[in-house]
Length: 236
Length: 236
Image (cartoon, rainbow over all chains, first blue to last red; front, side, top):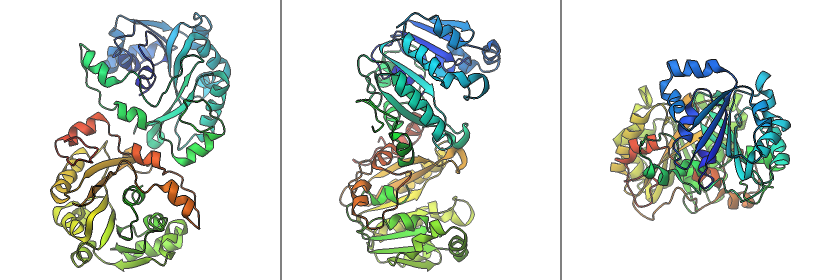
């Protein structure tokens, strides 16, 4: 979901940055997209990559794609030096926002992402559990609303291994061509037909994509005061 | 969800049977519907009702509605004596289908429900976790397909307290006026405006209703061979 929600929402993504994601799973899903020409991944911990290659080959397979360029280092630093407008999409697959990952939910980090995205480019950021972390979600939405001038949306998916069984995603776009996150412009069903090495998707399809943006009233009420944009699924 | 998915899918439900549900929570949600005139509840264990009234008043409040008629007994027996075509909707809020509740996922039970429903009446049955019980779900769909001549649909919702964080619902209709479960004909947003005692919904809205029918490919593949109906969201 974290890779396909943003990449199916824009036409022909070419240049993608993955922040974290050292296990390779996000890369594997980014690689599905034939339009993608260049994938940077900035992972702070080389051991995550090594361990994944040794023990989780089905995830680490993502590193085998020749379009992938691995950078070991701090993504906040990496983004400060990234050329302005370089990326069509940035995907932040980080650990929980405590300790070293705290910076990844703060405004300066989002500002460097917005700067590194082309106009109408998209960010997908892990965004906690709607059942457990409503206030943290509110804070992230608030910061992103200030930073991203396109749309700001919240989506979620059922993942039994996360606490409370769900994980959320914050989807933002920069000022430019409007992005309607809820209705994928670049549907996976079309892409799958075009792929040479077809690996069946087990969880994602266009129907699940749209359904991910349906929010229960308790969450909608909490975040409603903070969200904006003409294409947003969140109320003003 | 278990009460609102079926009751928002048919116009003006009047007569409803709840099987199990002795805590009163389903009754509370059925009571939202101003068109409902008569609610039977058949709970096998009186102690569930008593304990809920003592310790869970926010659920047990459902019993205070004068339209509610409590029957303590075995629902399989209750349904055998129910007048044919009596109910607009039957809601089965049972425990897991092992031991004494095993009968509640078997064909004779579904046949008595189909008999007790009016033409175009609906059943909503708890239907396990898509992550854990695919084969059981397949079996239930298979039996319901044989029994219900209208549509057979599967929906699910995030409930952190269930194993794997989700619970499923099997929605079936009898032969008669077609029921499009995915697009609620009797939307809660309209009902809420009409209610005298407005209690805010926290999880359900029409958007969540429709999203509940989005199924991941792994589940869709498993159940696709078994499902039918022109209005079903499940492939033939």
